Amino acid sequence: MHQQKRQPELVEGNLPVFVFPTELIFYADDQSTHKQVLTLYNPYEFALKFKVLCTTPNKYVVADAAGAVKPQCCVDIVIRHRDVQSCHYGVKDKFRLQVSEQSQRKALGRKEVVAILLPSAKEQQKEEEEKRIKEHLTESFFFEQSFQPGKNRAVSSGPSLLTVFLGVVCIAALMLPTLGDVESLVPLYLHLSVNQKLVAAYILGLITMAILRT
Image (cartoon, rainbow, N blue to C red; front, side, top):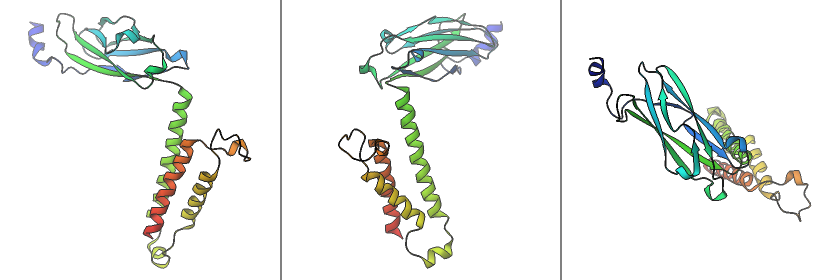
């Protein structure tokens, strides 16, 4: 009788599944990341059984790919990447966790987790840092342009000192040698990467557009 009363609430495929994290990132140069842990939570008042599926099972080893979770408990699922090769860099694989009641076979809920292999954690952090710098400079530039007093705008039609300064800095950055240029006489600490020069060129383009509009 208890199952019959609860059955209408448990529609197939509609039960929310709680998993953390929702993305697995493996780094080829860091063996400690080759083994990741997925935590499956069961906040409900009834037990759940689960099953882990993968789009590329030959690349991973899943410990306890099937099991059960007691009510209001959680279980850890260990996933190990066993095919760390450069040909897999950037390829997104997917894990699917299916849950159901222990007394039933149909899946009440599903959750997909993305897995990706990257070459280096340091490169990823460097790209994120450069992206943050680019966003910060862009926001600062538009903030300065947007909140100039109206009186100053009417009197002066030329660019502000901050705009000119940023433009000079970007031009200087573009004139500096690129990393790997061994024939340059400029000190090595002033050599910029290609990504840094792209950021400078992007900001210089914004400054040019702003100057043309004044």
